[in-house]
Amino acid sequence: MTGPTTVLHVDMDAFYASIEERDDPRLRGRAVCVGGTPEGRGVIASASYAARKFGVRSAMPTRQALALCPELVLVPPDFDKYIAASRHIMAIFLRYTPLVEPLSLDEAFLDVTGTEHLFGTPIDIAGSIKRDILRETRLVASVGVASSKFLAKLASDLSKPDGVRVIAPGEERAVLDPLPVSVIFGVGPRTAKRLEALGVRTVADLASLSRDHVMARFGASGAWIHDLAHGIDVRRVTPRRDEKSFSQERTFPEDVTDREWLKRRLLEFSEELAYRLRSHGLKARTVTIKARYWNFKTVTRTKTLDAATHLGARVYSASRELFERVPNGALRLLGIQVSGLEDVRTPAQGQLFPGGALFPKGESRERARDEKLERAQEGLDRLRAKFGARTVIPASLLGERPTLGVPGSEPRIDLALDDEPEPTTHSV
Image 1 (tube, rainbow, N blue to C red):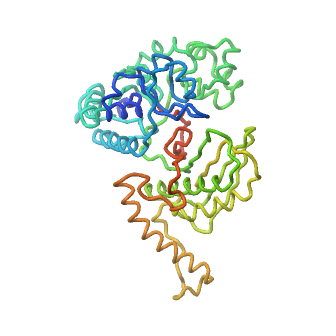
Image 2: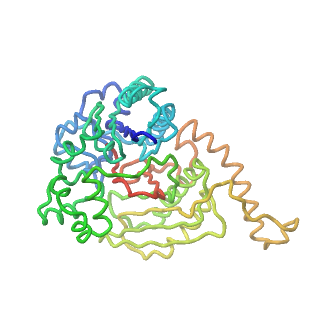
Image 3: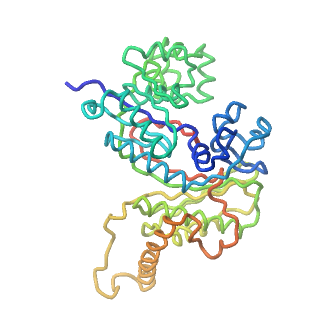
């Protein structure tokens, strides 16, 4: 028989803000936030613990954050730097177990079951990981240790900042019962309101109800939240979470009617998404654009390509074509999603006859152009990886202030999951 499962949830403390403090000693100990400007619709992406003492938190409008903390130091985000730090941290995790499931740039689940003979007890492993991260990146992590993903995540939340918390078998009820029901994955504000109408405010209240009663009220999700209220979570740590789509969108500080300017944003998004596809060894077959008007009405337009691509020019061509089908009007948000992802190693339809006799001349020329673009792109990607995202940009974007890398334009990866989705936040 196998022994009990041991799961670690490692979560970096104030990740973006901590990186900025690490790299600029003048920021240390101050109320630091990574975020957009207070003009328009800027928001906070990450807040240091000194800023949190004033009530500042992630996803808060920057204007509100400054009202709470006038001495707030606002730093624009640098996602290339955050991604590099994340890769280093994930590599540290893999020293201890191959069973690592990243959730975002700054957190992951680790299954360390059976590694005691190599690295010591789970608490020893948690301590070693924290020390490795601190020594090699000068960043601080919090770690939760438990028998399941839900409990490990809860433990890391309870350990913050800079702690290790263990929820041992048999301790679940004592830890869970007094907590608000909102700590349960899947209980958002609306579900919490419905539960409160039933007299359910704490996890103990939810656990005291019969499973059938909760299912009758909330359907399949009722079974899920009732199980978690009893500490039951059978999900495994899944090392590979297959990407389902990538998206990039931007909420503008002010509503925009200039369609030529908006097309340049589509070009900017297309190049960024294509780079991310290439970085992951993927191509996309479907392009979708999303436009949200001043009155919050949202429209989407989708096109499926004849052949999957990871070239910015191809993504932009499709998104621009789709944009022509979007009615005129003042937009507060614009975005692109690429989906229908394929591994670059997936065999493509080749030529049956030499000289391109199988395909029309126009299609053959397009394939030849794509092959040349791909060869050129390899060198450009190496420059970008070495010198930063703005090293190589389309000529039509020269001289423009970038709109990517600011809050409201964070990259997103949608994952194809076999288990219940995790709650997502901009940062912790």
